[in-house]
Length: 164
Image 1 (cartoon, rainbow, N blue to C red):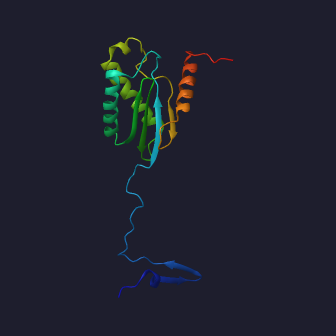
Image 2 (cartoon, rainbow, N blue to C red):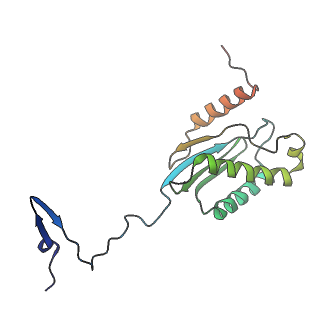
Image 3 (cartoon, one colour):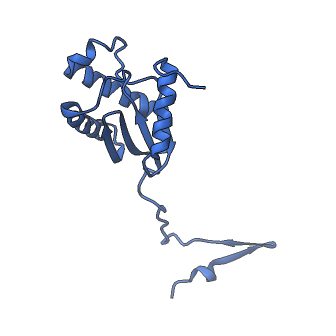
């Protein structure tokens, strides 16, 4: 009969060590390398640009392609007239700044190539307003956080003045 784990103790001074049989295989706790979830949000650079109609439909398609291309997991995607929101699961080695810049650049390029009406106003080749909202979360941003982020971003752009 093979020895059990309790039979495989070896005394070395006052310390008891466990000797693991070569037949014992340890499995990783999780086989899924995607451990970190982030809720992310971008808003259009111009207040008059809305993510509706054909643009809304294309954003769903383009985001899916980006996520597949980079082996990221898309858990949630919401295209609203005033913002683009998603939840991403990525390996711990993926920096939010890196994946946000990739998504900004790829979607900006697609939008400006396919929707010339925006290209006339956006001179920077970046469709999105400066900055982004990223929080560690498995749930979408609370509505008040979105509203506050949009207000703050527009104030930083000089579009809205803060009232006394």
